[in-house]
Picture 1 (cartoon, rainbow, N blue to C red):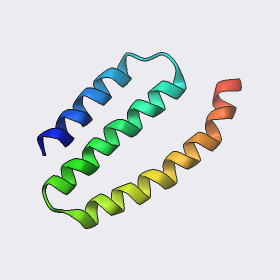
Picture 2: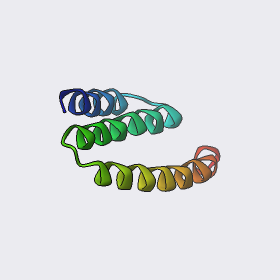
Picture 3: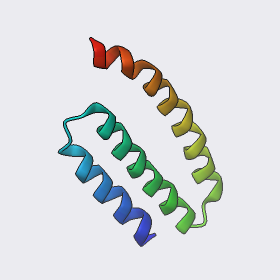
Length: 72
């Protein structure tokens, strides 16, 4: 749980000071992976898998739309 919470905290902190949209999205993903590790540390594996599948789906949609946001 310590590794997951520290990963979530530090990745979100580093993501806050980024200026590039792609780097912000990358650090957001690292932060979410920290939350997933935190859930696994609490032995809540169904929640971690649910979070993983939802995050993958919505992050894929974000990547598909990010081209329009960057070029706008």
